[in-house]
Amino acid sequence: MVKSLRRSELYKKIWENGISKTASELNTTTYKLKDAAKSGNIPLPDNSYWSNLHVGNSVSKLKLPNSKNDYIIDIIEKHKSTTKIEKSILIDITKNEDSLTKNKTIQEYFPNIDFKNPRMINKAMNNTTVPKTMPQKKERFINDFMDERKKEKNSYFGVRESTEYINSKNYIGTLYFHKRDNIEISTNALIVTNTLLKVLNNAGAVVTLDDKNLRILFEDAKLILGCHVPSRQILVGPEDKRWNEWNNKVYIPANETIYFSLKLDKFWGELKPIRHEIDESDSDYIRRVLIKIISFIPQSREQIEKDRLQAIEAAKEEKLKEIQRDKHEQAYKELNSLLNKTRAHQIAVQLNLYLEDSNIENVEKLKYFFELSDWIDGKTNNNILTDSDRQKLIDDFFNVQKSYNNPFY
Image 1 (cartoon, rainbow, N blue to C red):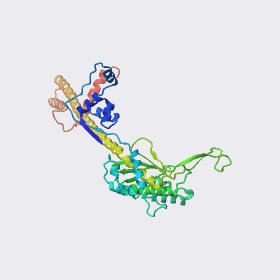
Image 2 (tube, rainbow, N blue to C red; image 1 turned 90 degrees about the horizontal axis):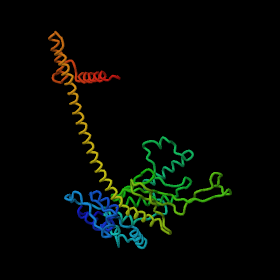
Image 3 (cartoon, rainbow, N blue to C red; image 1 turned 135 degrees about the vertical axis):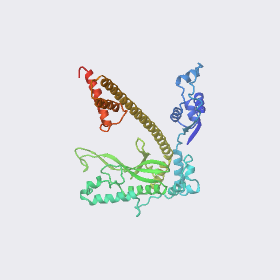
Image 4 (tube, rainbow, N blue to C red; image 1 turned 60 degrees about the horizontal axis):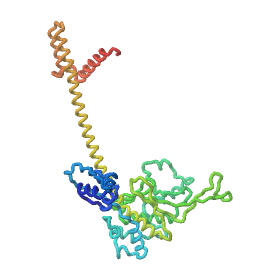
């Protein structure tokens, strides 16, 4: 959500109430408020201003620059906590399977989110059921993963038949599970993951592969989802067949078969795990993962909008740089041309002076030399010599002069 107010109004609030109180009044954070003030070229009071004001000393406000330019400033509100919302949804869902259709819709649970397809989300939430066996019609990524695993088992030593196939452009990989090398992915883990993918598709999300994770495009939000097969570490002694002289630590499967993690797309940071709770069914867990994904929508939309505005600003800056480069290039060309003409004229003047003082008796030849002088000055054309000849002659002339004037050449 965004609050809009005039630049002068925001300046007045900040200098009368301070950053913290103004941020609280506008339902935003101090960081976002400072960012908005900076974008509006609004000066901020420092700590000495408030301390002097508190003890009764005279203080002076920094004036608002360009006060006549009183445009509207948008301030992004802070995100509302979704913890209580998630718990209330889960309580309703676990107590009454039809709660989302009879009592509340997903829009009512998340009033700060403007959903495009709330009915699809409601239906997907209500129809969330993790089956005991893998369905015949599996989701695409699960189907590809299981086919790939069969190929590995059937190939020599459990390795794919050709490394060239892996490195080829046609191979895009399959669904990746974060796990220890010795931990097997159970069928139940695949069933739960398949259910989550089905629920996301039914809710209107577009799911694609992204290296070792899944990319989710959902309600104009872009998120990254990770699939994890958890394990725990144990110590073994020499009497255990898993013990060896290099390592006495082994990993065994954990109580939960699978868990998922989430973060904003193109956001630096670790994926935040969404772990199973005690005595939580797989179906309730999938619902809770979907709720967590929904709770990320405002933050993702805000980041996407911020990236869009930054891209616009970057494009403007690049356009200005391009215009500046064009102006620079044009000015350089014009000045370079002027300098060349000046040098050519200087040569022509010296050449004319020489010809006037010369003892050339052949009138036709003298006339021809004067014509060449006019040509090098750019006054006439020549059927034999070219523009590149003129430039070379000018460069050679001044290079010879430079060499002649340099005693160390």
